[in-house]
Length: 242
Image (cartoon, rainbow, N blue to C red; front, side, top):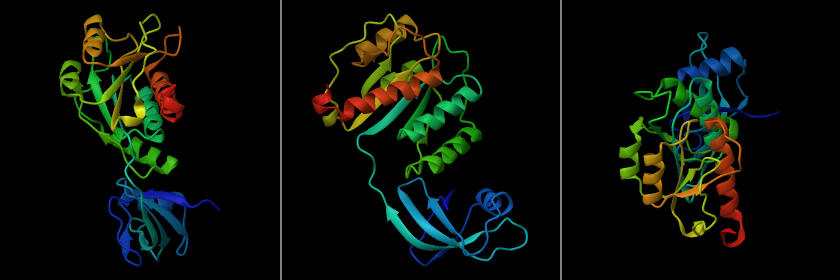
């Protein structure tokens, strides 16, 4: 039987006990109807994954005490991967966040571009919940850092990673990509479905960002993110980044 996965921002040492966050406890007891003695997999989003045993709970279903049976601290991913993205409307951004988390992105930075239709002013609580759910689904030990939305120009001025940006189909995508194995921090920039404005694309090129494309089709933002992340992951694994 599959061990159910839960998020707990703090995981103590082996044999210590903890209380699951109330929302996670409610899901374990009221939705999944787990019983004392069942095993749980816990993630703290900071690199620790633990196996725990569910202990007796109260009748309210809001408290789920667990005893830690084992715990493993995973090393931080290398290279670190940051996603700068113009958020699409509605559920499209949820899909994008899930894909980015499952593909190991460590930091997500919403950017406000000229052609963007959606321009959120702050991080939604729902976005954080989507990231937590995706971490549990993928058993990703690291919860991505989610930044507050920032204007494109300001984000670009502060960026320091080896970067790529999702090119529109007729872009001058550069086949001479950098050697990725020596980079400690990588980033992917994805604009809105209308594409980066000409001055934004020019700014990316002047900042040393490498344009990449998957062909002639115009992709939705939530499609471009996993597709181009997958392409870059493939380049990382390829001999000499061929």
